Image (tube, rainbow over all chains, first blue to last red; front, side):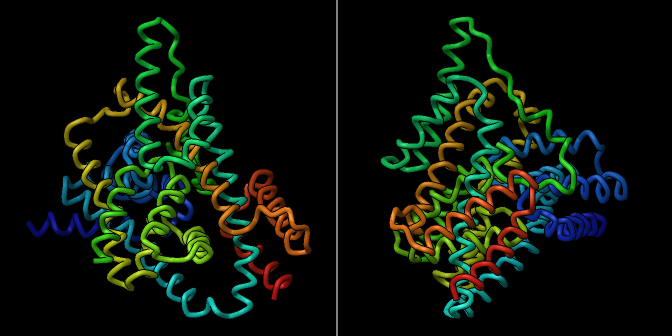
Length: 208
Length: 180
């Protein structure tokens, strides 16, 4: 019993230390997970990390949080998953809350307001950059290009959640039809790339 | 009441949040506008702060929207709400479908999911530009300079792979110099 709690605390604490490294995204955690969890703690094997990150991308939610939960589950079951998830989320929760509170204190300051005029243009650039990066992994053939093309104007009229559901259903139907008609199915491009991320890389629009 | 709305909203967002946080911005935005939680410009600033912090953009935005609407309790409720679907699905998948990403059906869902997530991010950038008056044809110093800031930011991100944090901080300093 005591042993179990110690392990849960260790899971929590390990991911608590890794959490702040998820700056802009989950893949930045990989080198730290390799060092802390594979080499030091020897809880999982190195190839498990790649597998779990691939799996983490098939679940809604952030890659950082999902992969931490998967690793936690592998090490300590359901409780382990929860411990790892809280560990990885807590530091960023506190940091973002601190930043948010400070912002609300100073946002009437004319200098801060001026800074945000420029920052808003930069945020737009970051989103456009995310779109460009996502296009590279998501548009693999004519069908996917077509779904994307229809999707943009459609979003002005339908709820985004409905668009996501329709997109997934359209994908499943078109794969089904392609199989029936005997077309070649375009393989997924991104899975084999997971291992190539280094600590200098960050996650924007990847991981879908 | 607001706490319940926050919980409901971010729980649903957590359930569909595929593809990195940027695809979730229009969804969070549409809910924020529907409930009238915060004005458009302030929402954009919150996205900026989410981008400056470590952690996932979607979760960070949830925390900040929650905090702006109902303080610390709102922040905690929103964070929990957006995390619950992920943790439940992770536990289910880890317990039952160990090799889900090899499953043909799941793969075929993702085949359509990925391009629609791309549409969402493109849509996010269009609606973002519109709601922040960045798309105007009224030529002024402010408009031209913002266009240059946008262009330079995109350039250093693509060409030199700068970390977004540094781009945001530098851009903020430029803003203070130009517009205050």
